[in-house]
Length: 547
Image 1 (tube, rainbow, N blue to C red):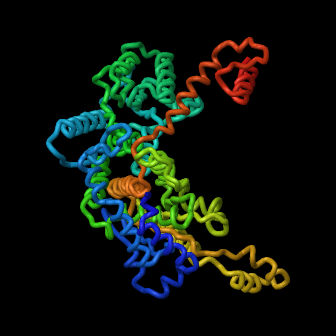
Image 2: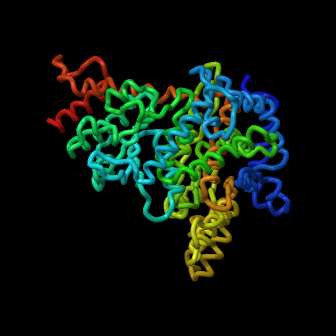
Image 3: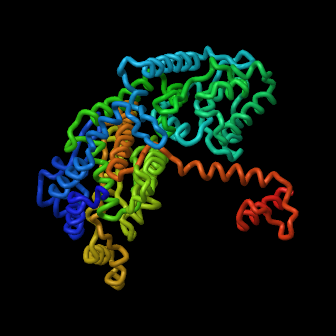
């Protein structure tokens, strides 16, 4: 029996049926304490979930569901280092990567030693003591990675890099499409460029091919084989493969097998971020995450911020039928946050079997998407307000600007966020739309046009605010979503830490590439037997285009 077939699950289904006809606006009007009662705060982050289709009875039933799932025992197992990733027989110890103290074990000693090596390299680069093959100081660093080796560092670097010129400048390349690397390195000087190759196995296809192209670029500019060490650092556990490439062990930082890619920002994968923002700021990023870790580990369910966000996710997805979820950061520097959270949510919880290997029989992770406000208001907010699909929203709102707001634009940004929140809740009736049209002199067609202007409102959403975007607040924010994702995996009874769905496409990709480069088949119909006819036809079109 699944958790949702339990008495607690059946009770919640009944609560959802009861609340579907309720008005969120009416609930706020009826209870002046609702914004306080339906809010939670931790590590400098404040969650207001008073605009969800939820009342105190349903919330209490959600907390009972979490207790039925033994959520606190699962949290304890995570922090105790048990093999919560049971299909790969590994713990998930990303919290140790940002911890200031832990059990005196060899594992944590190695983490601390790696941090010290990162610090030394960061300070060497930022003080311009690292020299390239012509003796000039390194001016640019290019991070070569994909997935978690790119999304987290790219997000954090862009969110936190100080205004003004930085030395060295940090760039990111992830796509195997040669245009991305080409466009990034085109304005750079090979003699003053350092590449960080981020690949646990040193065999990730996209990363390795970009690294090979980068090596050719350096060599074509005059770098000899013995010069490459001055221009390459690797984050990998495969020292032999790195050495064969030309990166000596002394230039390699470890990435242990218990570090999942989407949780790797806190490890040596975060080296590019530390270079971009400075070591002290990187340490503050770690401290922000650690503060959220401590809250998550030590706080009871009714005030546990990650757990409450997970319960809201499960409530909206499982009981109200939402299939997707929008994250809308009202901060330009957080525009890559939805990209990061897509991997975190969908790679972790996009699963169809439970921990025992049986089909779950219900939907798990929602499709997560979003973009920075206010630009999204001029594209997809139309669907949020008037579309037919239920789409819960997280508004992410820094309340104060990072710099001085002399012309008041940040205040306008905040006003836009709060306005979108209110519009999602209150909507606009057809009668109100008609009255508005008549006030604008549209008497002739007001009645006909009014339904086109009407909005149903009652759209569930949260507002997650903090004073300003800092390394500490960003660290807490990312750790919050990590732990929310874990709690949801417990409630859905799935493993959040494996990603077998990524592997099949890689395996078939190697097969397809081999066939593409092989001589065309000589059988009667021009087809091989290894692939389907549709794929074969497209391969032939590729051959023709490249003949």
